[in-house]
Each structure stands twice: as C-alpha cells, then as structure tokens.
Image (cartoon, rainbow, N blue to C red):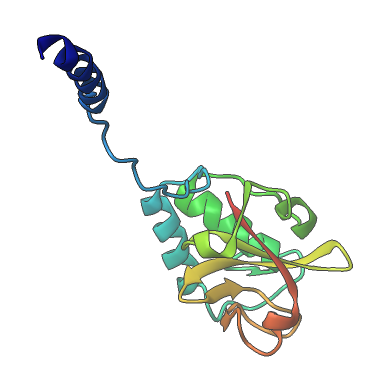
Length: 163
C-alpha cells in the first residue's frame, strides 16, 4: 500500500507547491498622467485671478498694458509675465504652439484657449474655470469673461495649451 500512495503523494505535493507561490499585490489603478506644466498650480491660479481683474480694460490692437489697453495676445503676455514671470509669444500664431497641447478634460485654470480658423490661430484667451475664459475680443470692446459653450465660441475650432 505504501508503494501505491507514494506517487500520489508526490504529485499532490507538487500541485500544492505550485499553489503556494508568493502572492502578488493587485495592480494599481491606471491614472492618466497630467500634461506637464511650467507653472505651479499657485501660479496658474494667480494668472487666473489677475486675468479676471482686468475684465473691463479697453481693447486696443497691439495693446499690452492696462494703461494702453489689450489685444488678446497682449493680455496673455502681460498676465503671464506679471504673475508667473513667464514670457509668452506676442502673437496668436506663436501661442498655438506654446507649451503643451492638452485634452479638454485636463483643462485647468491658467491654461490657454486658442481659436483657429482655416488652420490659422486667430484668437486666444486664458481659461479661468467652469467653462469660462477671459479674453480681449475685438475693436471697440473690452476685456471680458465668456463661456466656451456660448453659441459663438462653441462653433469655433479650439485647442488647449498648458504653458
């Protein structure tokens, strides 16, 4: 009887040994990485607060100070320089490639919204949260706060950039 049990015991021991391997930790949940940022979250919030504070400043083509008024890229350049010490490109054409392209779900305060028509950048603003952005829209206007989903802006081709 002993001879018959020995092969079965040996087989059972080998099977059970295979089951006794060291357990591994469960896989970590996959978290989408945030696009890189040159600005800290605090700087991005400072940019946002200053941009909102400039609402009502007159529009002026080529303007880049509160005293002279702003065009869209002048507003962005002024705010980023004052609040984050970062020099932004002076034209919307330069802003379309500035920083890192980000998907809409990753948008945070201080990021840029850059609008294009026929493949050329033609307008830009600073995202301030809750689907809104600050921009200097056009001659005769003032710096203002608008919604990305408004009837006009929702129809525009837009890209999001993280400086």
